[in-house]
Image 1 (spheres, rainbow, N blue to C red):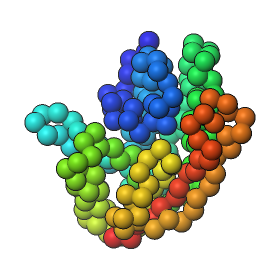
Image 2 (cartoon, rainbow, N blue to C red):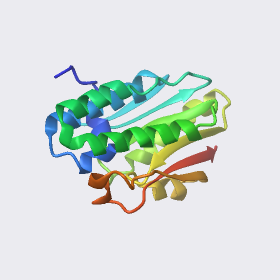
Image 3 (cartoon, rainbow, N blue to C red):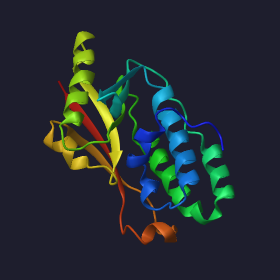
Image 4 (cartoon, rainbow, N blue to C red):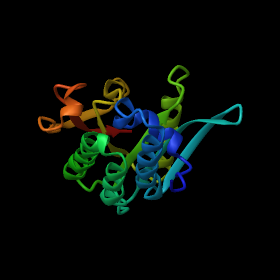
Length: 192
């Protein structure tokens, strides 16, 4: 097994596949690939700690930063190691593809917001840190992309405007159809 990205623990709970994969090694490897994509291309990362334990992270791009391409080959190699998860891995690839298609090349994009403790307002605290940094740079608008796996209504309740909603094709993914009849990706914008 390859060395895991240091932020893998944050990606696992938001990973669409987490619900469907019962194999710890497959979950960790896929989460690590996605963590590498989210965090290596971010020029802003804030990790929140409580009692010396990381409980949340936010990452984004401020300014025109070329986002790192998702390593589809690495994901597909995992499906060779774990062929029973081929549908789930293809599903994750389709979600990332749809996000890439929807991305309007905005100058400011929130890549990842993850709170391991959803009861103490950590998400709002991390959004506040992100927005403070944007305001220091005289930036008053940013974008984010999410999907049905995340609590996208949280964004609506916290001042984000839904710009676009796109379906993900799942008709040919039998393992995914066990859990979903429909699945969507969302593009939000927030003015600050």
